[in-house]
Length: 204
Image (cartoon, rainbow, N blue to C red):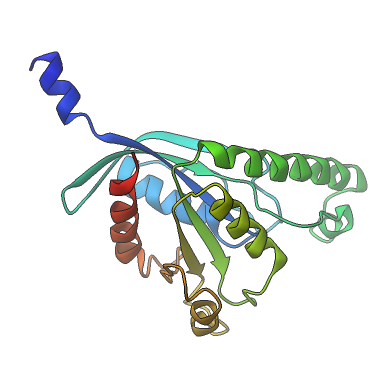
């Protein structure tokens, strides 16, 4: 194969960022995609808030849906929060010192995640569908995405839970593409992949 032919056949590179509030299921979803398309996870999942405190990446993920062949970089962002209270970590068994350190790292991670948005091509805004979508965190993320003209998909997660209220999410964000899923049960994942492929095609 000549180098010219190789250049033509080389997949487009798209940087896919996972954004959302704390414990919305970003890492679980990132891991599903990592395993499906690269055979490996992106990060560690924990019930303790702010388990992801640094940006985690999985590069060279060959994403091929309906003939759309893309070289993805999966970027799992720290959970966004308006405040980080060290006391909340003590409830999970962390010592006062560990809680304070975790809070510092979480705060730094939030700042880095927002700054890194400039380098993202497409974003998945993962929401916890068992909670109200009218949250300052969600509007902060969407505001930043729109300001930077980044394409994104709103992903209400945890639809397998009885308390899930996808209808409210859809009504709250009716002007955007909304793709409900359960990352844990892998429900709605194929539809999400289709939506990612369509957006990725538009990335220059």
